[in-house]
Length: 134
Image (cartoon, rainbow, N blue to C red; front, top):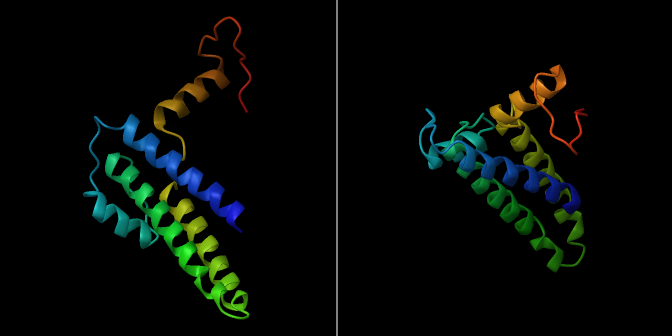
């Protein structure tokens, strides 16, 4: 289950950092980071700006903390009966959070336009580069 969580956390962090770095000049309309975190935890779509990127990083840390707390019952006899279902719930929660936060586009708009241009043959490809985009 932690392998799945690692992939989810990696995608959340990539999405968040990309939003923080590529959208600095653009200000979102959904409020600050705290408001965006609450929106994400309520399974809403976060803003496509720096505050949304910060919220994604906070949510990744929060689900990481939840996963660690889900393992606390392992300290007791037969604790896995409690901790494994709890960890499964954290995996599902993190996956739904990722899907809801990034709904409408995981890639930034400029990268989507670049890929679309390559698909349509509108973008020049330099020497030694491939034109293949899937």
